[in-house]
Length: 293
Image (cartoon, rainbow, N blue to C red; front, side, top):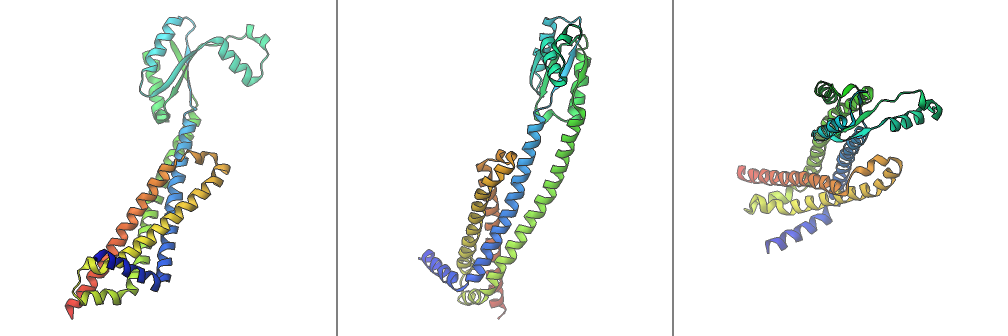
């Protein structure tokens, strides 16, 4: 019976306060869009950095006197390291093919050019940082110095990746915190404005002796409905815009649909918390006014 009453009261509120409901819906939609787009951009950018980090290779130059069996033993030990994704032995002919392909050298020069043997190592994306690679290379040289005499890796390239990670981390933390605060404040003021215009209803309910939850329930239903509508509209815009974004920014496709849904659910939960708190605060305020009288 009470649920039926609250639903009827909510329906009347929707008819009488269309402007306020539209304002709450618009605020929820814009705030959700802002937070979702920012969050998805951060995730896609981080994964693009990981994709570039996956291309990092470390070449360990093998000594001329080292036997193939000794080199394979080193390869097996390196493959067991937790920071190594995969590692392989590269012979002289393959090194020559890569070299001639890069510089356009003639095959006739193969007889006069001596190519080294390599152990090519691909670190995991989490280990493709300047600090970890410096530590790894120094450890390899000290442990396998009888087989490996030098190490080559793209230091400048990895430095750029480190800088991008740092910049993105700082930007994501600051922008994420500010966006969440702005979302909560905007939703709070928009929902409070609706409840403020409903002050007469709240006071009447309080004068009749109704509890805070009873008085606030119809307005809470309206706030929840407006918030859900705003989140759904934002999700629709994101789904439509994602098609065009993927065509122009291929790295955006790394974001998964379930991650979008998760972010929308988190924002919906935040909005629900704001709705409940604002409705209960307004109802308790109305009851305090009744008590003063």
